[in-house]
Amino acid sequence: MPELPEVETVRAYIDRCVSGQYIKNIEIFLPRLIKNATAEEFAAALTGQMIQSVRRRGKYLRVQCSGAVSLLVHLRMTGSLLYEEPCRDVPARRILFRLSKGCLTYRDIRTLGCLWLVPSQGKTGISGYDSLGPDGTSPEFTVPYLQAALKGSHRKIKAFLLDQTAVAGLGNIYVDEALFQAHIRPSRRCDRISRRDSERLHDAVVQVLRTGLENGGTTIRDFINGRGSAGHNQDFLCVYGREGKPCPVCGEPIKYVKLAGRGTRYCPHCQK
Ligand SMILES: [Zn+2]
Image (cartoon, rainbow, N blue to C red; front, side, top):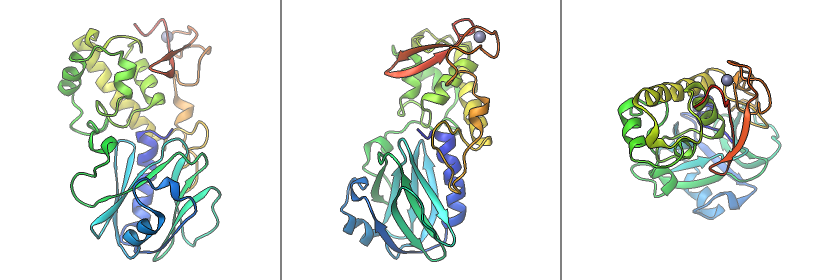
């Protein structure tokens, strides 16, 4: 699933390509991806609008339009936005936005993504979006914020970090990597994490997200950026997808367990 670095990689490219362009028309090949409007309402609301910018919060993309209504997108498992100029055929194209110069495609192999019409200003009314905590890369995600949030929680740290209302943008890959960098076992209870460990965890979260972004995202199965190419961060992962392989620090085999309903990898020697 695309996480903050992958969604941000898509956002940065698409924003550069589509900002300032008008939506000339919209072709919807799979209307059920639109969650709060019919295909006709969706097309009517966005056609003729100018795209001002493409923004991101957590794993959501917001295509900010000049009118009262904008577009909110969650890529889920295999969704992506692609820009083509001139337009050409794209496999797994579900929605096509013909713009003044090129084409913006919403592409999705497993068709689990979601699109919503939302007000251009203020709350969106989409609870998953309106309840997002601070982005893991934002100035609001501070050591005191994290410490206060950990103190009040009896949950396992893995579940806490996956919860988008606590920190937005992390998913299974970057949570496992951040906990490895911070030397914290994924099953440790939040309120049992010391001040020193929580400082290390904060820095690890910021670091793994930044590195992921610098490497253009992680492509395990089918993540592609807005131009259609893969990321490189998979070459730099320490624990994710490396179960049974030696820990890059101590050589102990990386362990695999199920935690918070998700496959979880950690080093039993380095992470306490
Ligand atoms: Zn180790």
